[in-house]
Length: 307
Figure 1 (cartoon, rainbow, N blue to C red):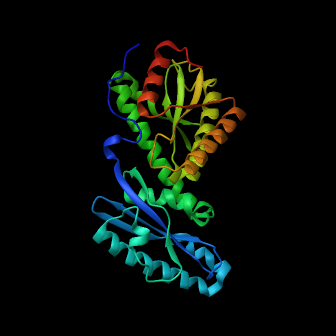
Figure 2: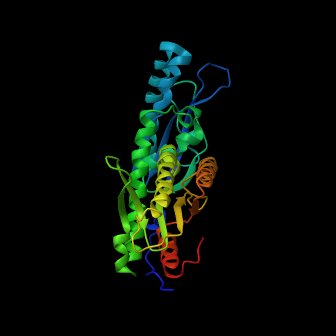
Figure 3: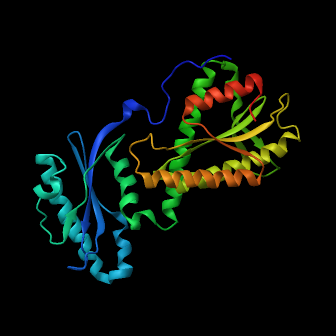
């Protein structure tokens, strides 16, 4: 076996992660009711302070009618004041007692310390963890944005695998990004990798793009099913691929930027993809990071022992 060069291509790249502190902001919409709604988030990374009102608050119009605008104003006022406080004094575990809200009924949750590439990313993740409004966003344009984002992330993963693999076996470069015509006038079918022994597509399951990633991954499984049929029609001239697989990198508890609830959702998404793969007698293989994916492709192409 030819070892891959030891490049650091794991997800997430450790050097890109920085410490972030963040705190959820709650409001009691009805005085003395005890009910709390997450209305925003404040975060601090180094000298950068970021506060954001929960975008999904506008969905409360269906519950409170025009009065929901009061919640928006309260959220904006409270977060502006909190941002000023954090900018001056930082975001410590005592911020809940140190900061006085200018709006009644506002309180802070527990300060969380984690790591992330960006403040924006970690706020998106924790909105879904702390707010049912964010966690149950309705499908539509948001799904389309997620799917585009998932496609960009998967393309980056594929590019990294290609760079790693071709650093060892230059001739394998031509096996990536292969296209085939299923029928005259039909869209071109694209495969991430089509080699001598294996045909593979690549997928990345990340909490902030999960809905889009699942939809995109299922489409890649369907493409693999078509490719297996095409193998019998001479698509892969001079090659005899015996395995058609979706290689999946999924976020795990090693990625400390994600709360447990987000990881549970990722695991459920992978189980959904496995069930879809079983329907077509395909393989959905979990491999953490581009390094392991490239190593797996290299080993499979050399000895063909993987099934």
